[in-house]
Image (cartoon, rainbow, N blue to C red; front, side):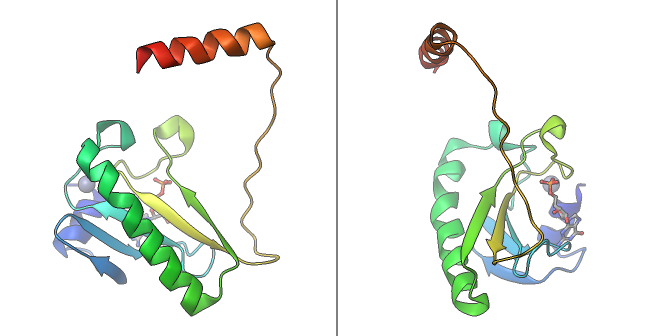
Length: 134
Ligand code: 5GP
Ligand code: ZN
């Protein structure tokens, strides 16, 4: 059983901040920034791609609600809402989860997007192919 399933089952303790029939949210042990929280479905899904779509559609209002509470309590000035999908993307616990990472001026968390160059034709072609595969 994975570590988040153990947390859901109460076999491993956690600092819970939210619970309903389908979801649990608890403080991330790393506390990358103060209030760093994880939201997980109670049922095990490896990642976003295998998550049932009705659960996918239920999770964002919960993320929003928790972020609003964190903002009120910690005075966070912003958030990164993050999902690592797959090992190559940095996923280390293979139970789908959303990170709610509160941001503060001069905190130590850092996300930087690098840039790549593609021609207009390449981008058009790529967008069309993705669109036609939906
Ligand atoms: P990932 O790298 O898969 O996107 O994120 C996994 C997260 O789970 C990490 O931020 C890590 O700190 C957190 N984590 C790992 N083990 C535990 C645990 O036992 N308890 C809690 N609360 N968080 C954990
Ligand atoms: Zn699990």
